Amino acid sequence: MTVILRTIAEVRAWRRALPAGQTLGFVPTMGALHAGHISLMELAKRRASVTIASIFVNPLQFGPNEDLAKYPRPIEKDLALLEAAGIDAVFLPGVANLYPDGASTFVVEESVSAPMCGAVRPGHFRGVTTVVLKLFNIVQPDLAVFGQKDAQQCAVIERMVRDLAVPVEIVRGAIVREPDGLALSSRNVYLSPEDRAAAPLIHASLQAAKAAFEAGQRDASALAAIGRKVLGQDPRFTLQYWDVRDPQTLTSIDTVPTGGALLAVAAYLGSTRLIDNIVLAPF
Ligand code: PAF
Image (cartoon, rainbow, N blue to C red; front, side, top):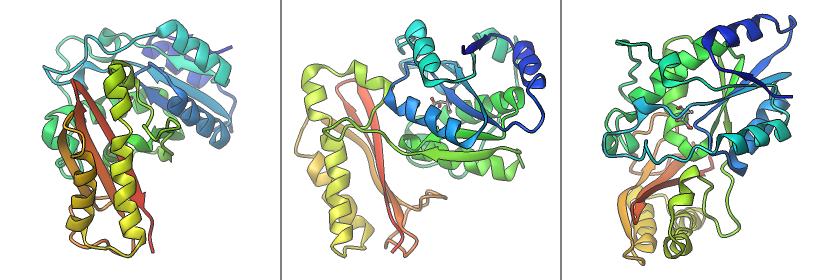
């Protein structure tokens, strides 16, 4: 049975009652769980002896014109999926549990969070780091699993954990894709049938650049030009960025170094914002 915990006090009591010597693995989510999330749960289960997930649609990481109100919240289905995945507990806080009236303390990472999604979604990563550190303080996990689909989020959290000496190991889980290449995302449900049919072009644009890299192209602007050209084939896409960056610091690079690089895209398809990425392996 997955134990449902609704308050900070309930999580703390559950945590205290765990037998000594157990390792606790944590998967924070905003719900609307799909096979990508389940793969993170499975990774947590392989890496830790006890597992806890959280489901909290965090208002602090949504901009004023973003999809907070319409974000899907299929809670019964989510709980059934966690149960089936064998997760030991789930934390389901309400907004008032996590943000008491007058809450005025925030966590801001200023470098890794600046470009890419940080540049087009002001305040987004401040919301993420604030809620993630707070969840870490409540759950006190040994390790926490985040999806590589949000590569920048992973890098920002890794930086925060390093800078603030947070005693949690960050584990990245691989992107899970539909058979046609579209990365799984809770936001894919927003896509119209026509947009859904076009969506795999994002992954195709990354693959095209990766193929050029594997054929020897090391020039970052040439790789980005290849990716942008593929995405440009369908006027339905409004590109936000198609970037080649250092995978840890997210600074832009001119030439792919031997340590590899991150290819990352964000684009609107209709009113749905999609992101995806591929890591170019060290060579
Ligand atoms: O990746 C997400 O679902 C969210 O950004 C997270 C990490 C749960 C914080 O709200």
